Image 1 (cartoon, rainbow, N blue to C red):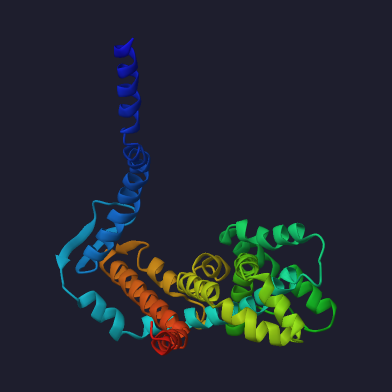
Image 2: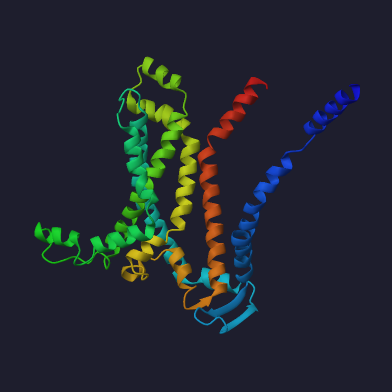
Length: 327
């Protein structure tokens, strides 16, 4: 009898000592294997080939030139040429045209939907409708807008019928109309996602703060300026940085709408289109790798600048408060 009890105690204690953490690591091993094979290794190869002159035919892999080590020559060719900075400027313009109206509309909608005094009905429906364009592939949106704004498309037919134009207008061959349409496509696809992110940030603010503002007689604009925006800074910085990264990687919509030509005088040719251009036909692995690395560096630097500028004013104030309190 005593031995049975002792045996049960031994079994129970041994079960408690079982380390279940190893099973967690076992379950995430497939993810790391897939990531290492399909993401990490290509990244390493991209950085590696950026220091080589390496060409390969896209249709016949046996036709190649290199790889020949050239050091920083690929980077020098990119940064000393005019094309890269022209396409960088195009990308920044397209991002500004998209982000400014996007953040304004998303902020207004976020504050509107989270305002308890309005008590809007059907919020789930409107949230779903706003987010739905984000689920559509950018290539599909680009093809749709290309057909809508083509010379024989419905937009031109309406404009001619209304008497606004005497003849169909070539939107694709006009510099600023192409930019505005591409920015409009990106706005349509991403403003719903941005709105939901900002709404989650507003809903994370303690409601007692808004109640205190109402008691103190603060109006809607003053509440938004002095309470909502300062407390929304972390999520706003996140939205800004992710939008900036997405803007620098703009490709699908512009590629489809401009038929890979970049519009009039390549005014809508983005950095990613430039990268894709160097990697089609007779593939230039060295130039493509160097462009990828430069885009990564620019993205990282701009993200750091945005982050530190956004928190520049708040960090010293905290330090002063701690110093003044003697803690």
